[in-house]
Amino acid sequence: MFGKDFQRKYALTDQGVKNVKAGALWTVVVNLVVMGGMGILYLLMLRFMDTLTENAPLPEAWPFLAMVLAFVALSFVAHVQQYKATYGLVYSEVKNVRIRLAERLRKLPLGFFGNRDLADLTETLMGDVNRLEHVWSHCLGYLYGSYISTAVIAVALLVYDWRLALAALWGVPVAFALLFGSRRLAKRNSEITKAARLQASDGIQEMLENIREIRATNQEDRFLQQLNSKIDYHEKTSIKGELTVGIFVNAASVIMRLGVATTILTGANLILSGKIDFMLLFMFLLVITRVYAPFDQALALIAEMFVSQVSASRLMEIEDTPVADGAEEFHPAGHDIEFQNVSFSYDNKEVLHDVSFTAKEGEVTALVGPSGSGKSTCARLAARLWDIDSGRISVGGVDISTVDPEVLLSDYAMVFQDVMLFDDTVMENIRLGRHGATDEEVRAAARAANCDEFVQKLPDGYDTPIGENGAKLSGGERQRISIARALLKNAPIVLLDEATASLDVENESKVQAALSRLLAGKTVLVIAHRMRTVQSADKVVVLAEGKVAEQGSPVELLAMDGIFAHMVRLQTQGQSWTIGK
Image (cartoon, rainbow, N blue to C red; front, side, top):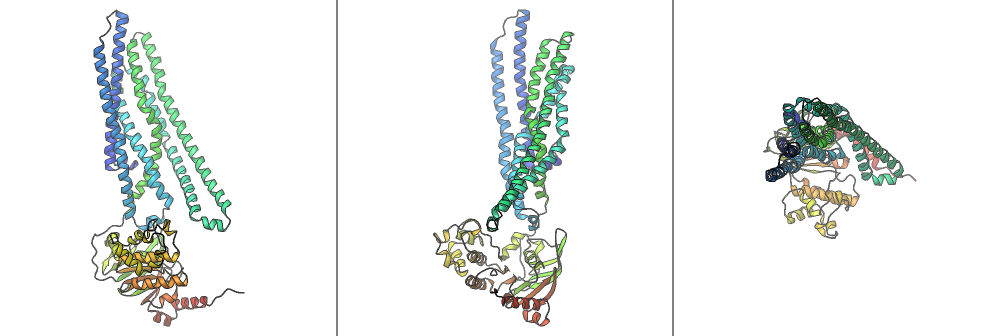
């Protein structure tokens, strides 16, 4: 019942399966204890009937009072234990599930994130886990416990009178058969609703991220209409899905409760024929009120169980994605980066083919080439942000695919044009370069990156919050914080996406001065866009259509008069362009 298939179906951990078992056990105990209360009521009614029909004396009160007190005590203990097993254990487990998911995401290769947008992952971490949390706590243990307790009670009823038992219980399997028959329809509606919800979330996120461009182009009305359409579609799919499920749930509830009518009709017929007495029918009527009660909530939630399987499959997709792992130690013989016949594909489309080159320690190796030639891909593969399809990438003779990415990245510093900053202080944003660095070490790195000039003008200096992604800073100031991080880390390998390409002249000179301090004596792999940057490189690797077209020193490549020389000529011509009058 609670095997691996069950575990995957509802994305349960091993502890989660134990929680469901505990919840089911205590639900069985609660249902049987409550049924015992019906037994006390039956015994009391039986004694009063004896008094009315046989002129027997009234029964003594104390035995019944003792049974009632015992029932209340047992019921209290059983309900408390059921609450702990179904709610207390699950709520503590949900925290562990989210932490485990976050840890899993932290270790996944970046290729996974290329196929999933932010809204989708947020929905999985928050919405899907919330949905499953409700199923784990409110439904699974409760439903399976009800199955077991109903089976026990059904056996007892069959022993008493199989005719009344069948009349009372026939509706239960029919009701659940109807619900399980609607499972595919409920699941399909859930998938459609979830896709519509993600479209609406993406639309909202897109408008917020691009609000400046939307206003600048006077496209507010068009984007709002598109967003309204997405929200309306989500609303329609939600209503349709809930209405469809509601019809089946209510139909199942009505069918199940028809057992009361068939029990009365069957019992009346048996009484008239003299085959049973009234008290037996009374006992069955008491029992079936409690047989149906556990399923009242379960019928509503069983539809949610079907829908939750869509959420569970999304969680299991993350769990099933192979992580990038490897050795916990990294001891290279130097820090030369060597590509040997490397090939790599995005979504089955080859981006790099048979790429080979070496970026030597203490030298600057520039990657140049047309847009889409694979420059950024090479830089990211060099840090094992993705894993290659074939070939070998080594650092100091060590195959990086054998090293845990987090261990490997301790030897890397990265400075890219797209700087990512946190909504925190200047101090803490720089300290990301090396956790545990002292304030003085952070300030020293900031001074080396020419950050002091603008930080001193901030209201609270290094303790000033800089807003989401550094919204309160200029582009040059954000770049210098990024370089200060790299200086603080002081890693032997630097990956650089030309950080000065979009800066003004004054900021460019300051950032270049900071970069000079950062790059001294390191293995530097730079994605170059400006040919004047390439002129000072020790080696240039020219990529074209995912292959190495040329490589050598800038002087050698100019003498070859190939792709590199052509790019230099084009950029030289572009520098002479002026705005016409």
